[in-house]
Length: 77
Image 1 (cartoon, rainbow, N blue to C red):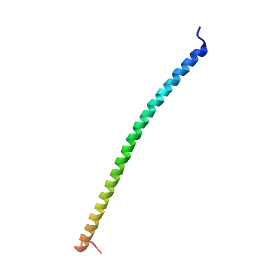
Image 2: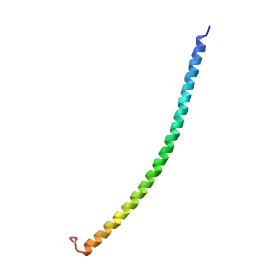
Image 3: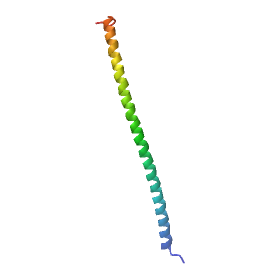
Image 4: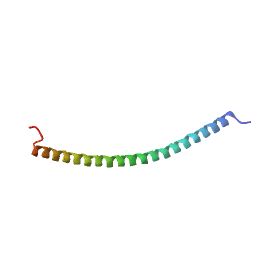
């Protein structure tokens, strides 16, 4: 005859294995997410640098237009 304690131990052992397997899976997924996040941060940094470059160019063009408008007396004083 099988004792209830043996059944309970087997059940608990199976449940522990399930939990451990699930934790392993989550750990693998976490590594993948971290890798993706690193790539996203890198791309965002590149976009920020490009935006700053374009912004500087727009400022230069705007300053040039202001000087042209003043020279041509197109701006009210």
